[in-house]
Image 1 (cartoon, rainbow, N blue to C red):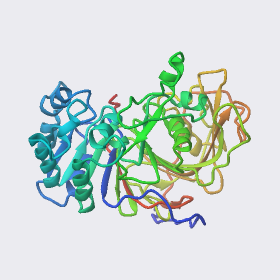
Image 2: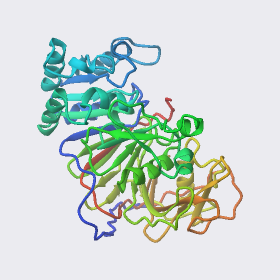
Image 3: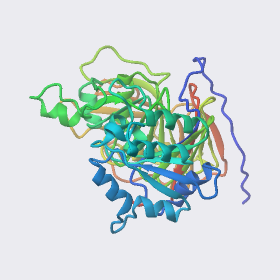
Length: 457
């Protein structure tokens, strides 16, 4: 049987003002726990510099101390290469920036010899890589108390504007937006209804406003000023591995943005110009709240009609037109019923729900939090705009709806099926496609996904 491959373009546009995620340079967002073997990610970073043997400055300021950061840079561990060895193996010329939470005073300015050496490393780098750890430490080391730029940040912005690549993993990814948030869980954010603590630069990344409320400290979160290399969007890391789609959706309202990007582990999102492409093992969620409706006042977080998209390797996303492009085969035949999670904020539960939904006869997938009093309900819904594509185990999903709130009060048609653990059979039709999303954005995103299907926590 012959198969015919062609592109389908769905011209779904919005009348919203052309405001969206913007970056003027080349930005790689790595979701964390990137395997040393993820060559597509590291090769893409190197190739983006347009230099055969690029200089890369490795920033370690998310570490608990300078000593810890230097250990990660110089010392390989069983199963993990040091940063120095990793970047040498991928064709870079690496150096480390001696700037951390315990020596930032002087190490980020021209007032000391060490500071001048650090600044020169940034000035001469073709790529700058930010490590994982705690994003508030990056913010502390690179920004002044009032959030203005330190001298080393001024040089970094200049390099970015002139074409240098900025890449960050985990905390190093999270800090690249105008605001960076963290701590807590999806359910905790739902429970406290987006009441995140706003921090000053240098404060602990936690909600400690009530010293007698340990649950708030553990489960809720906080946000602080980030670097602003990505604007008008919020990002989150370790996305499916740690069940964070609820956390990001709630935080977006707290911070005041309508676009979000959730990057899973061993996955990278490359942003340049107006297009986004994917490399890596898992995938990226794109969350668009421009069509969101907010129900009448409730004690806990509630939201209806959020658009979500899920992209994997080979996909791209235009942040101006909001078109999702995939070379995978479009799903035209469906079977069975959608998965109904009883722990919707658990590991991979959101991803499992949406993948199951798009290849099922169901119109919705209903998930409940394992926590109760109250129980949070999440409904993923297909409508006439929804499109899905599949190639082997890799999915692309465009224009699902998401509704979230207290159990029994959520829009949509919740499934009456009992929770189950099997995934429906799927067919692989022969049509590839492009599906437009709603709203507008201004960035280019390259999603980087490797084919190693292991988790690295």
